[in-house]
Image 1 (cartoon, rainbow, N blue to C red):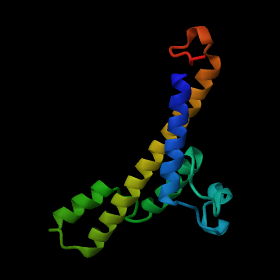
Image 2 (image 1 turned 180 degrees about the horizontal axis):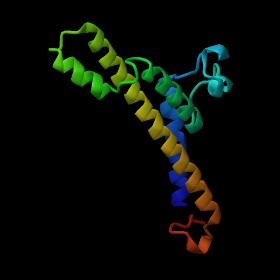
Image 3 (image 1 turned 90 degrees about the vertical axis):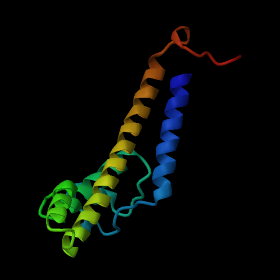
Image 4 (image 1 turned 135 degrees about the vertical axis):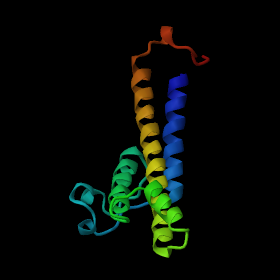
Length: 135
């Protein structure tokens, strides 16, 4: 029962959080990578969509500063006296992109844990259950 509750809670939490962010893929499949074209115009509301959008974000983030990460660009910006506006913009964009990727990745983990919880629930007999529903 506890796993069923946990699975339902995790699934609804992931769905509600992703739905609230109103993330969706571009409408034109040609603007997406071939692997992601199937997601054109789809709203991201579950784990597999979150993973796909995270992958898309990764493609865009990699193209911002010749593949450099936020920390590399930030270090360069600081070393140049924090006056380079182009580096400052790239730094901000990389931070936002990498943060979004991390949050979407967490959504995928929650989605996987939800599935695992439901799978475990199906294997647990009533005699082995920690919580038994009241009759």
